[in-house]
Length: 145
Image 1 (cartoon, rainbow, N blue to C red):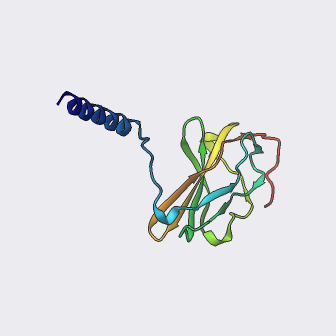
Image 2 (image 1 turned 90 degrees about the horizontal axis):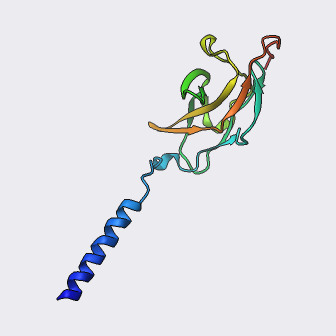
Image 3 (image 1 turned 60 degrees about the vertical axis):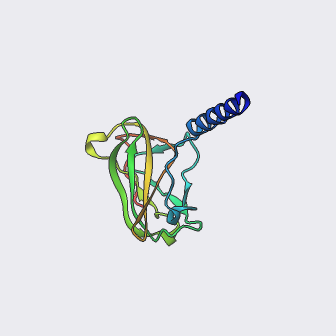
């Protein structure tokens, strides 16, 4: 009797510890699986406000059909600064070159990242790029992309 009670108690303790140790992860909808950013992926990049850049992605086995937006976020505040690109076919695989813009209120050098928002038949698929540093140089003329 003592052995079975002790065994039951040990099993209950192991089960409780196992449940508590399981990580809580947000699971991507199945329609998003395989969707990933392919550029920028290298941390430590130095970009210049007003110059031309692009974001690229791989659809993998995902069902993403449209890139609803590519938004620029301030990495310090996690605040959306500006939408760089809107409503392009996901099958393009890249945004095309665009002039890196900042909102007038956020016109300062600092660390930023892109949030790529895809649509997979009504399912939202959102990816964050690596952080990169943007230098604002008022003497640098904007590029023509």
